[in-house]
Image 1 (cartoon, rainbow, N blue to C red):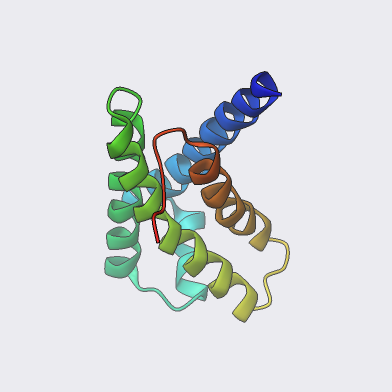
Image 2 (cartoon, one colour; image 1 turned 120 degrees about the horizontal axis):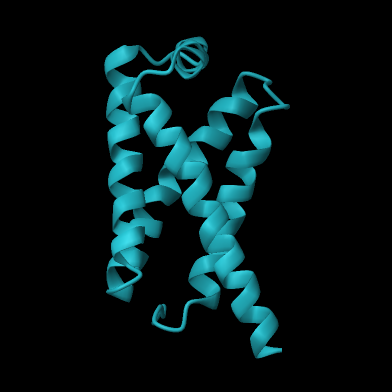
Length: 123
């Protein structure tokens, strides 16, 4: 059981980095398709770049977290609002073919925190 949990954790971790990594880089480097998509959601060029920088910071924190686990948790918690915002924006604009990645990112955030041995919520 522990092996399965570890495999799920690392597969989720890699997919999380992949999705946020390419999305942030497409925004920061202003890939035309991403800029048009963000504009259709109501974000101008400046806001799109700011969102991309925020996502890129989160991705870098997660990568640094390989060596310092508390930093990884901060990166995941930083990216969670971006996942929720993307899901909300796609659903609000009825872009049902684009909302899957953002929904998966919302679910993976909870899964990554739940399976992380160093993360605890104390109430």
